[in-house]
Image (cartoon, rainbow, N blue to C red; front, side):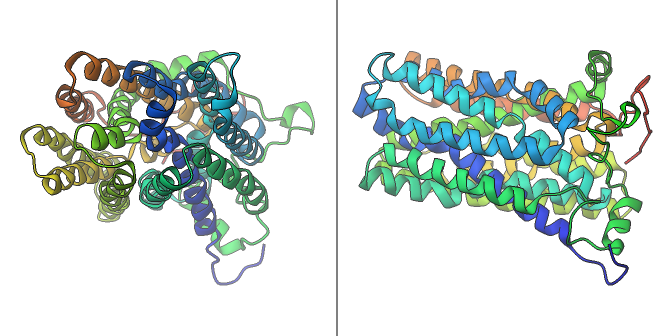
Length: 450
């Protein structure tokens, strides 16, 4: 590293996280865009489709703690690269489910969606881990908001494309396209991602800026092949217990479950809502679904910017993180108004406001980067994502049963909006002060404060 004018390699790293997370969420959304067409083509009812939607979540949740442990044990670069390649492969294979006769379409779709979920498990803990290593505390909210906002950008960019591909070529080609893109991206990842100390493009000025302002630059530096005393050790269950007994973290976990309930409504049932409840074509629904997502993307970036601005103005970490979260999630409850209006434009406008609010309040990963112990940042993120993504299982199934029982989306929207209200309560009443957790009795532990 050379002492010279500060480089900005951390922004290249952040750009790569944004691109990978965009593809990550686009692959999750493939089934929702193609869902109505698959139902019609393969004869799948709403309850069965709800279970298929949820398949991703079952494996994704089960994979969080092992995925986080692997990140802490082997480092972000290698584990994440394997993750990208394998989830993309299983996405591509979904294009062939119509030709798998011996286990049935629903079963084969369920299995492949589970495998996608399992492969994607290390992704968001890996994002939080890399941001904690590469960004100072006062830049971490914006950095986390940017990679998290990729979930909205994925819909903005790929919902119209996937809707068009489904309309023109048929639903199998959606999975073929997205899987191929991800496999290529896994190769690019290996060329771009390194730890701060090892990156060939970083200079000393940028490294010191990160290190001296809260970046956990040596997170992946312990050798896996050196003497026993220097090998990186994975955290154990006693350390997990310390996290699970923190009231602050339990409040954050509850709120993330509720936030993800809103996310998974938009990722799974929202395009179906537009087609079945509002009478749009699949092609139109693909384009219309991108409009609220644009607002979610703007809200997502704005939430991080506002939070870091408040930090620079001297506000506490708790105030800086909670302010956009509470305001944003309060706005997300506005979707319930859609039950009382008929005008198509007004419905889309209300959903756009709700999605903007959800984006504004989606700072959970910044909170994870702020609170995770250095020794188990991956596993801490995995626990957070485990609790949060129980919603990826429950939300599609609950909404499927609601629709099947009532014949409409009215109570489904009430259910989703109520989750936003509970998330606000959790941050205001349960979480308390936001601060980094310091582990007790961790070998070679170094206490680090955000």
